[in-house]
Image (cartoon, rainbow, N blue to C red; front, side):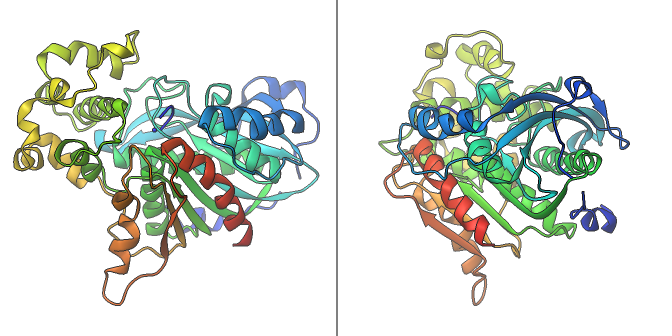
Length: 406
């Protein structure tokens, strides 16, 4: 979270494509390029080694408010915005167009490991991977991974980036679809560039940690091999996340958690086709303001009450009512950890995280280890007394070291 938070077997086989790096920038790359699959892409920038190291040594420490030793970049990176077709599962597979980022190392190599990064919650539609200049978390991933010889991709979730859909915050099947189709689209672009990928890793922060686990479930179900999955401050259970701030608040809970209820209430209303759902969650006094927040209209952030009893209707503070409400039932079903995980997973959590509690950070591991004799594929790892931002900043080089060794 920013600022404080039948697929065919042929696709599985296509996960390793053999292909040469893109050479110098061509004039044709400055406009949208069509790929035979119908995917298109455009060059949106080239970041040299100096810029990447500026991110690692100055920009990231300033934004995330923590100094972390990163591995210096050793190559420049080309950045592409990918536009691709997808569908909305919750709306009978309604066809839509979505966008994402493809970052390609500028080297003579013809094959790279690939990491798919799932972004956290943001306040603006354009604080997402395909607008990297506006996304400090994406910048850090580009600098640490693409600057070290990884292809980095990142989907803008439905409703974000250049998408014209309403936002689908916490709408699990759509977030799985966005990330899955972005991976396929990126493979098509890389194929045209004659670039192959040797391994597949996935990672995400905060909301992106949840999406990463949901994405992993989708990939495993269709037989796509994932070499490693990592999260930082990732809530694998959305009901647990939302219930925690209401039922068992902590002294260090972030003041901006109000946005989580706003985004999820309106998203659930739109994607699950429950007219008026958000109005049953948000109080009359703040409904119009909340709608502006969701629709990314202009508003004053200080007008959103930090006291949840003012924003959320009183009945939701009764755990039984919350769990049995339409909103609560959707949240209860929005979980990404209750299957037998086959992929090695590292879930990093911060002991001073103001969003994701230590218990929630360990949830996936504890659940998996509680299955019979225990599934030990998932490991929860503390980043120490780090807050929400600090947990991500600290985890990124740990992801890199772990991925390098896989």
